Length: 246
View 1 (cartoon, rainbow, N blue to C red):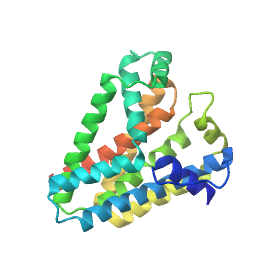
View 2 (view 1 turned 45 degrees about the vertical axis):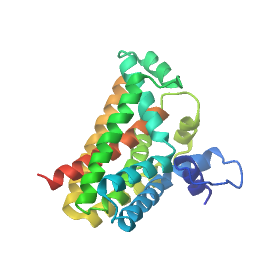
View 3 (view 1 turned 45 degrees about the horizontal axis):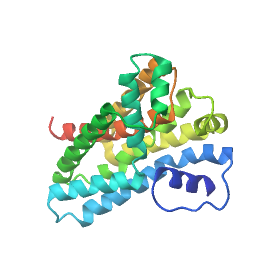
View 4 (view 1 turned 180 degrees about the vertical axis):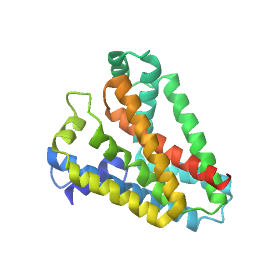
């Protein structure tokens, strides 16, 4: 279970103590459990929505968003902010873009990107809770954490060292592809036609994000992977809402 514990420690703030120092192969295999961790996060959010449904919707949607961010430690929001700063400040230059991503400081574009994304997530949560569509809370975090699997399977990692390089080297590609396909089929089986439309949007959005990464950087970085998780979650929530009103 070492890869599962690694994924749980990396993707959440749940206190996990690893029995030993993980190997490069175990780090790579931990990506297989990313959708599982996403489903666990979604299960917690679903339980909040179900058991606290008597609260005013404004308060409930705010609490769910705060817990959602807290459970992930803001890990992916940090990647979103760094990517936004670099995309704008890089002026189309690859090396400048990569250099800005390494800067730990968060610029105004990064702050704006976080605020806008959280506003869109909150308003979408409010509408879905109003419609009592709680099941989306389980699957949206899962779909968000499927995006790293897709990117690791299809996109080169542009930095020469770091965790991503090791994961690419030892990545179990066939198992990752199997997990990716089974997760999508399970989502479609639960949600039927609506889920099928969301999966189509999900795949198109992933392909577009991959295209932009390759166009600007020649591949992906840890920050762009984190940004993809947040953007996919936001897009899935938005499109779920739009489907109820079209």
